[in-house]
Every structure is written in C-alpha cells, then in structure tokens.
Length: 204
Image 1 (cartoon, rainbow, N blue to C red):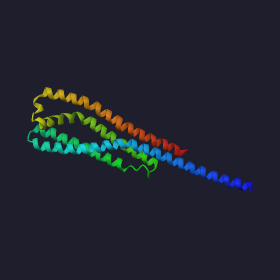
Image 2 (image 1 turned 45 degrees about the vertical axis):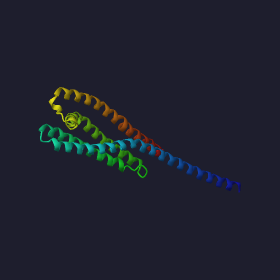
Image 3 (image 1 turned 90 degrees about the vertical axis):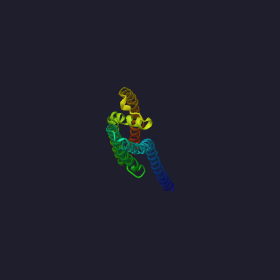
Image 4 (image 1 turned 30 degrees about the vertical axis):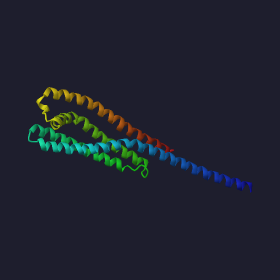
C-alpha cells in the first residue's frame, strides 16, 4: 500500500516537474523571441520613415526637374536626384516587406535566423548603395534645392558650391555611418544573438 502511494506520489511529482520544465521552456522561448522582435522594431521604424521620405523626395525632385528641366544642368542634377531617391525607395520597400513578413511566434528559430540573415544582406546592399552614391547625390541635390528655395543658381558660384558641398558631405558621411551602425547593425546582431541562445537551449 505504502509502495503504491509512493509510486503515485512520484508519478505526480514527475508530471508536475515535466509540466514546469515545459512552461519554463515556453517562457524562455517567448522571452527571447520578444527581445529579438523588440530589437528589430527600431530598423522597422527607420525603414518605414525612410520609405516615406524617399517617396516624398522622389516626387519633389521629379517635379523640380520638370519645372527647371529646360536648363540642361538642372535636367541632369534633377534627373539624377530623382533616380537616386527612386533607387532608395525601391530598396526601402524591399527591406520593409522583408521585415513585415517576419513571424516571430509561428516560425522555427532556424527560419527566423535565415530571415534575419536575408534582411542583413539586403541592408548591406542598401548601405553600400547609399554610401557610394552619396557624393554624387549631394552635388546633384544641393543646386536644385538652392534654386527652389531662393531662386539663385548655385552653380554660378563654384567656390561657395564646393565649400557647402564639402561641409554637407563631411557631416552626412559620419552621421549615416553612425545611424547604420547603431540602429541597424547592432540591432540585427542583438536580435540574432537572442535567437542563437534559444537555438542552443533547444539543442540541450
């Protein structure tokens, strides 16, 4: 009788322990997935904002090109500015779609890791495109902005144009690199780290 009761007690204890372990495992999984998602909320917000800005500026520069396009230099600078914004818009939309398709709670950890790696590759393409084209973009955008704001032709004053160009370029490059590093690369790395910890736990 005592042996049967001991056996039943042990089985009950074992069942509760198993349920507790499963609950702890689920809580850990949920916690790491939440952390990973929160890390990627920052890139998602920035890409959304950048998509809206790229669309607005693409329309803005297209309108400016049509308005001042009778002068060949504004046709060239306005056309390149529009093309630059449309390129960024295309990449932004692709990145935004990738981020919005990530399902953190109904997908395997391995699949999530692959999705984040794919987004990281897309982001690297975006970063290279932005940094490589930035010098040309600034030299194209600045004159047409000046023309719209005060009606002056900045290209009639090459000294001032070059001076302002170097100042804007000197500020833009470090700022972009800082934004890319702190709000994208670090966030992606942290999100992938939480998934790696969860993957290691599942292996055990």
